Image 1 (tube, helix red, strand yellow):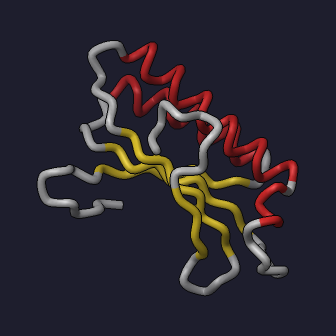
Image 2 (cartoon, one colour; image 1 turned 180 degrees about the horizontal axis):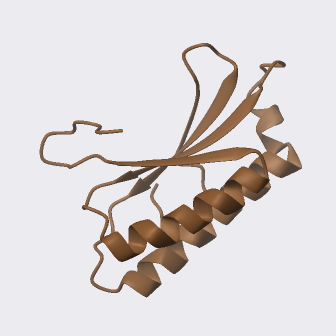
Image 3 (cartoon, one colour; image 1 turned 45 degrees about the vertical axis):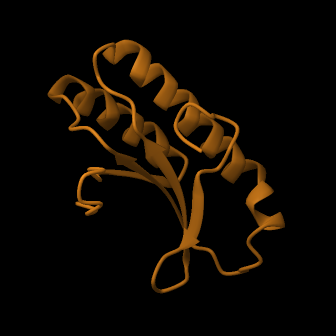
Length: 115
């Protein structure tokens, strides 16, 4: 599963306090074609937003007291500044729907998550 499989949830879990639902996106793509990369990522995020807004997650996650929704993108490659600015716009769009968008770098080499 990855960012290119827009109709697949890469990972799903709860926050430590078990009040927030976290959906994970694994993004292994390079940034050589930044426009295409952002388009693919935006499609995946949009699909996740639809998944949350439609309530489809309730079939999988039986927790009744979910108070927050988070989409978390784990990039393998460093995000260029221009893409970072575009992602801030996506964060704003998510926030309007009461969904938080977070992203971090998770290099394959050492598997550390730097959120």
